[in-house]
Image (cartoon, rainbow, N blue to C red; front, side, top):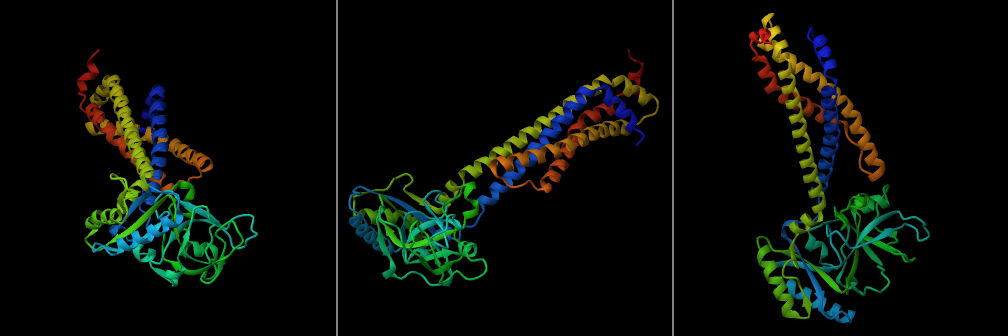
Length: 410
């Protein structure tokens, strides 16, 4: 503690360098804390469960060559599904307009009253048949599945309506937080026709993966219909251990049914692991970018501390030699520089804490991000202080080796 006063006096004589390093530490702390927070948020989002048995699923993007006749498309779709389900490597399959994690698709406002001016919530609309849940591996937790007789055909320009729907448990909880949604009516279209909830699934993710859709990430409505669209997605579940064989057999079976289709040879057939990777490409890229920025900033800050301390050691060699001649040990000199750097670091992290919170508040108001947890600030403070002490150690050791004879040199 006796060294504090001479250390403060020395820092006043080197104000520019002291303030520069403190500001560098403050800026690094503010950015690194928020970067770590963003990395955690992005990685947590990438790890969200979809509610599917993804390891055995793959999807086929099928574009129709002749798009003029919806009835012909529906007939061909039914033939395709029959052919896929008869393959030895395939356990089940269904056709759809979209699927969980696809990234794009149909979503509709959900209302409990047809005269509501504002929606109750938003939800993904998945066109499915009675094989969809068994294909996805998503169980029902209440109610029943669709029957084959309830599955209709839907042309893109037809008014969408379903007398019965199945919804995800998160949507059910959002609509009826105080009771069961089973058997209740909801409005999933712009019209005034109600749909009765006949089943509730376990966790089922929507196709929407963007940040704006976070409140609706697990809101899904299953519509009992085959969509006769310009293109069709086939979601296929392979038998255990036969994913590669099913991915090879399925396109061959489809082309055997009809050549009047287009399946991209590069990415027309995609495993669900690739679907997940593509869905979260931006999140992964952002996490990597934030990690790189953090590492670069920490390296620059460490280099700045090393450079400034080395400069001060070169300037103070005579003073260090005088202290050694007066009886200061090498440990005293080492402790002096470590304490000096610690004081600068404390000043920097105090300013950086305020700056980190201010940056996060700006991001909350501008981009609607979550509030920064003080735990990340605490981790950042500890990291910067340890980094500063590690960075100053080499020049401080060099200073401790200055001999007493330096005091006699001009």
